[in-house]
Amino acid sequence: MEGHQNGNNRLLNSSTSEVTELFVWPWMGIVANIPVEEKDGRYVRDGGSMLKHDLAAQGFKPVRVHPLWNYKGHSGFAVVEFDRDWLGFTNGMKFEKCFEANHRGKKDLYAAKQIGDELYGWIARDDDFHSESIIGEHLRRSGDLKTISGLEAEYEWKTTRLVANLSNAIEVKNMRLKEIECKYNETSISVSNLMAQKEVMHRTFNEEIMKIQQNGRSQLEKILKEHEKIRLELESQSKELEKREKELQKQEARNENESTKLFTEKKMNEHATLEQKKADENLRRLSENQKKEKEKLHRRIIELQKKLDAKQALELEVQCMRGALQVLRHMNVDGGNSELKNKMDAIQQDLREKEQDLDDLESLNQALIVKERKSNDELQEARKELINVSGVLFS
Image (cartoon, rainbow, N blue to C red; front, side, top):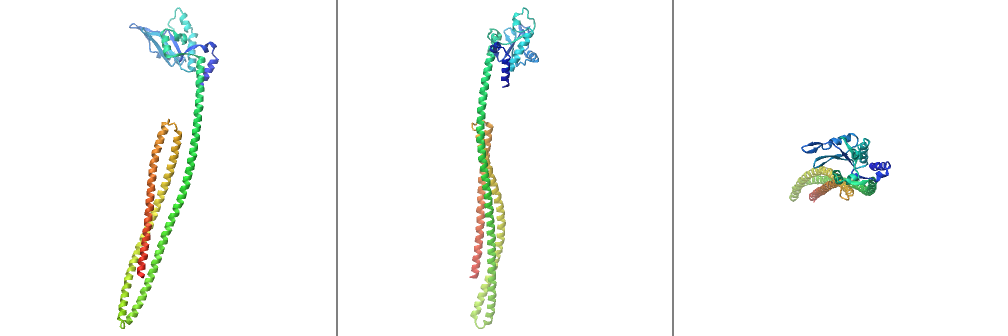
């Protein structure tokens, strides 16, 4: 756009003939009467770097210098290329005006009777382009003829097209940005819902754990009460038997059968006492096992809590990765951005790994729950067995 504005300024300062005049484009200047030396039957000269340096020192800013060669060697001519923009045209005209000011322009060259060893220069136009000389051959091979007004119109058309393309691109980007914002809002809502679900699950889990602990304590207290009741009943029976034993001892002389019956009941009482001791030992072991099971249950609860937190964190991470993947897919709809595609592939691979970890955590969680239920069932079976033993002792 800056070059285009410079072109407008240049047109305003140019004459009508200059605007419609045909120039060689890219802008090229011609340097003539370059000193050469004859060596081994050919004219020789440096490759043009020295001439480029001299022209650059004068402020003409040449891009490159092409010495022109023919079958005799160096022709004494060189073509100077300038930048393709309006600044290059300005430098080319300064180049020509400088030579004309020193009476070493194109007209001065062809009007001079003796040209001496001074350099002559001018900017290439249509007559140079169409000439049959080595200069014309090079210009036709390297450039084309254009008017300033034609170039101005071409730049104007390119600028208009560029503005239109940029406007369309901005509109497309804005539409995609709105789509991404919608997806982001959807993802934010989904994450908020997931966090709410996590809170509900966490609260429900804690309530279930508290119920399990309360049930365990209630069952143990009930077992201890039943055991105490059985112990008291056995002591009462033992006292009653002792009393009856004393009475039978008094009646032993009168009734041998009664003595035998008393002896039998005593043996049965001893057996019941022995069974009670075994029951006491079983109760002690059951209490120890209950205590160990409670400790193990507490460790399992902590482990299950950690696994649940890890699972919920992993579910949240998976949800966020899915949202990021959707956003990247919308940002790379046309598939032209390889960096976004590589990033999408990396996120997709990571997502599959996280989903596999989530499945593993779910399996481990189910295994812990099954193990917990099995332990609780074993405790219930032990309680029933103790109650059955007590029933046998009293029967």
